[in-house]
Length: 296
Image (cartoon, rainbow, N blue to C red):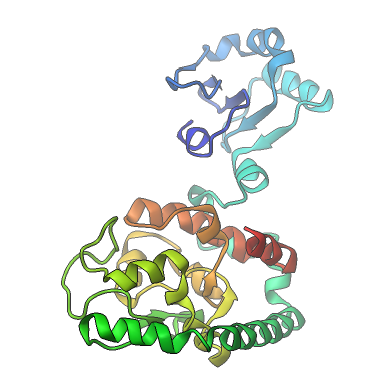
């Protein structure tokens, strides 16, 4: 129910589990009706014309025969029926974390991710586009460097150890947007006092990310992939989030599926939500998906 509100769903959706059925109209007050399990068949018949989809939560318990028969009838009459996991993937294009375990990688998908030809083509495109991007930015960099240095006489570039593919540590390079040696939260906050005036401009225009194109040329990163996280944060996440290390199966990117679908993560809950998008990208990534990320 909360996921529907978070994803701004407006359709009427019937949620079905082995315990209750509930209809979520995505109304403003978030009220959800939950008929008794014994009334489900009558409920399905009464509201059949109003259903857009039916979502079944995965369960080891069998549905009552009358309910199962009615669901089959609805499915073949044109009302799509999904498991909750499949609905996440088809409609929201992310992987629900409750389905992730140590054997998740051995399910279907990942074909292109394991294809060495695709990996070579992706590397060629990374080198070509990052080199082109650096050439375009080259005339602007001296002016940006001068503005950064003049504001507080600090270094122009910011270097930070990040975790790359297969947990290899590399030094990510960015134009410095924050004051030097400023203590505070590991996350950047709204109106963060540590951000310099020129740094605010750099962040708004994303120009602070330009030096990461050098990381792409070096092979530390890709143009598109999961965000490269700070080593310190990764150590915390791996202790708190099972299977977080799956996101390190591919190279991190300057932008990615999570970055274009979810705002900047400023806490553990945001990290969990972005991980769902990262895992979807790892499972299904292709040139088509990369193209849609570029358009976004």
